[in-house]
Length: 78
Image (cartoon, rainbow, N blue to C red; front, side, top):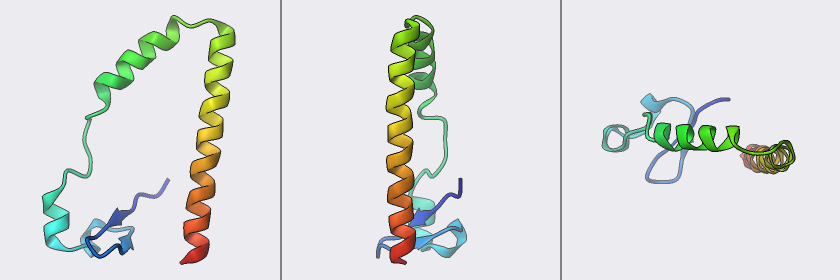
């Protein structure tokens, strides 16, 4: 997956070096903020039944397809 960065004027770049200095240094673009949530969800997933895991997988797949469609629409418009 390619990362992208948005500037204040709404422009999108695939290199952090192409956005304004204020935007580049004013935000934390990468980090481990979701680590605790991930670990909690991982533990909860291990406690689910097989049927619940199938439903979760289907929902995740639908979400992934939705994201891919949005990215495709964005790419087609640019």
